[in-house]
Each structure stands twice: as structure tokens, then as C-alpha cells.
Amino acid sequence: MKRKLFKQIRAEWRTNVWLALELLIVSVVMWYIVDYFYINLTIMSQPRGYDTEHCYRLSFNTVTDKNPGFIKDRTYEETCSDADEILTRLKHLPFVEAASLSVNSHPYNGSSNGTSIQRDSLTQYGFLPFYQVTPDFVKVFRYEGFGGESAEQMADMIEKGEILMAGSVFGDLKYSAENLVGLDFTLDGDTTRTYRLGAALRPVRHNDYTEWGTVLVKKLPLEYYGWAGEYCIRVRPDMDRDIEKQLMDMSESLFHVGNNLLVNVTSFKFVRERYQQAQSNQMRDMIFLLCFLLLNIFLGLFGTFWFRTQQRTGEIAIRMSMGATKTDIFRRLLTEGLILLVIVTPFAVALDCLLAWNEFSQFYEYSHIGWGRMTVTCCGAFLLIALMIAGGIWIPASRARRIQPAIALKDE
Image 1 (cartoon, rainbow, N blue to C red):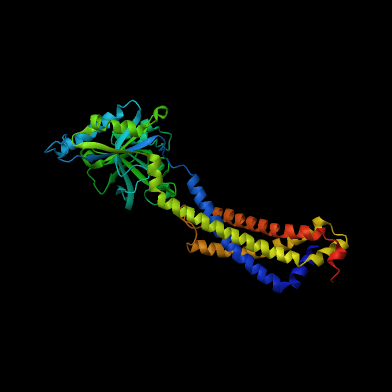
Image 2 (cartoon, rainbow, N blue to C red):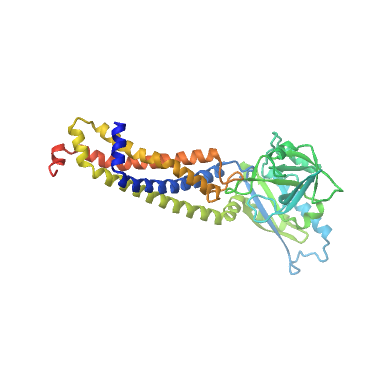
């Protein structure tokens, strides 16, 4: 049967060449779609490295001299002391589990600080994300230590002046943070002071649509409290009800400290949605576009093999009159379609690799190409096209098999 099938494919080579060309183009496009969804779903399913559930961001403003509580000639040192007092009051609220103050450090943040890190001849140049935080920051967002350190243990490390780190800071996996714990480093080229790496953090993602990145966490000095501004709290789960209203009701009485006044409380659920709105919209539009393209590919292949099978009604009738079963008919037609797909697949995979090598595919794990990833996505594209071919053959073949051979052949 296989030898006869190959002879028939060769005999109809003009038609099959065009069909093979269509399958080649469809295979490449299908691979791009599968690769896009595979990479984005993989990224979005990874742990973020922190937990923002039951967390809130508090915003304070400086009152003007028209406010009855305005204090004239407030010094910067007093402003820093006021910020420390606000933080203390937040920690003593019965429904607050942990509270922190930081600079451009909380998750889903549009701003960031950078630094460089050095040890002996090793120097990390460029932009290393740099979080300056009070010790309880890791408790608020429940950061996890790579070596099993708890948030409480890492808070103690920050309190002692040690730093925390996630990722590979020197551009080589052998210099990943977990391999550098206990060593001393200098920051920003300042050789007068060293910082001990207390613990490596579990990989931290900057948002839901990006991969893990490198992060360095350091204690926020008291002299920076005056302009830090990021007050974040974690609320006890059993008391997380109307927190925004409760805190705003305390604004004038409890959170008017010096010239600072609480003006807004925002859930991190809203912070997350607002920060990722543009990326979420882009992802949604891309999904709609690719699904529309996928539907067109399906209808195109489905129609092609439907028409091709319908044209062979007479051939099917002859085979049935010669004793072929319905299963034999379907298997022969499906095998013919799959053989053409198998023939073009190596060429499609070569084109896929070429596109990935030239960075037309999704960026993931420091590359646009990876053999494990290419294997999964190419096999996924092959399977989807095979299912479309099977669907395009099954329905018209089923109808053709129900026709009596004499009726199908009367025009012949």
C-alpha cells in the first residue's frame, strides 16, 4: 500500500508541490504562534518571587502652610524622624502584620534605582536593580531565601547591614547569588565600606510578563527616610476588610505626623492592574490577532483537504467496490496528507531555526532559541497541523464512504 501511495503522490506531483508549499508556509506561521503562546504561558506560570496578597501601598503628602497643622521651619532631620514615626505607628496597628518604607522598590513599580557591585577583579557594570528598604520589607512581600531562609531571618540580615541578592550579577551562572553567599562586596565603587551577602533570594520577577531578573536589596539608611515615600503594609488575612476606609479615617488623627498627611491607600491588586495595563492590553490584542490567524490557517487547511477529498469521490467508490473498508479509505487519505507534512517539516524546522537565530521569535532565558524549546514548539505545530489535516479529510471522506459506488460512478 505504501509503495502504491508514494507512486500516486509522485504521479500527482504538480498538485502536491503546491500543497507542500502551502504546508511549508503554514508550518512556519504555526510554529511562531505556538512559540509565542508557549513562552508567554511559561513566563506567566513561573513564581514571581514575592506575594502581594493582602498588601497595600500608602501615599503621604506634605501639607501646605494653609493647613492648621502645618509646622514652620521643619528640618530635614525632623522630617526623617517623622517618617520613622509613621512607620512605627503603622506597625502597631492591630490589623497590620508588617510594614516597610522603601525607595522605588515595591513590586509593580514604574521607577527603579541602579547600582554597580564589585568584588576583587569582578565588576558588574551597567544597571543592577537596587532596592533600598527597611528590614520588614521582605516580610511585607514574603520574599523567600534560596537556601530556605525565612522572611524573618532575612529581615534580621538587612537590619545588621547585610545585603540580599537574586540572579547572576557578573554575567555568568557560576556567579549566581546562591554561590556567593557569605562573601563581601563593595557598591558603586566605594571601597571604604564592604557589604556581606547574607542570603540569596529566590528568583524575583519585576512583573507578570517578564522573566526573572537580577535584584540587590540593601537597608535604607535613616537619613533617606525623608524622601523615601513608599509605605507598604501587609494586613492580617482574617482582618483584611475595608482597610482603605479604616486607614483614611485615621488620617487626621493618627497619620498627620509633622507636615506629612496620609492621602491615599491603594490595594496592590489595583497597583498590579494599573502598572500592567499597557502590557495586558498588548497581550490581549496579540492573543486575538494570533487566534484570528490560527482560525484562518485552520479554515484554509480544512478547506484545502476537504476539496481535495471531495474530488476523489470516484476514486473512493472504486476502492470500496474492490473491497476496501471505510477505515482503509480514511487511513489512506490521512496517510497521504501526513506524508506531505512530514516531507516539508524538516524545511519548516530549518526556517524556524533561522527566524529564531535572527531574533524574530520570543526572547526567553537569555536567548531567542533553545533546543528543548524548539523541540516542544515544532512538535506542537506539527501536531496541530496534523489534526487540521485529519479534520479536513474526515468529514468529506465520511460523506463519500456513505455513497453507493454505483451512484458515485454513474457519471464516469
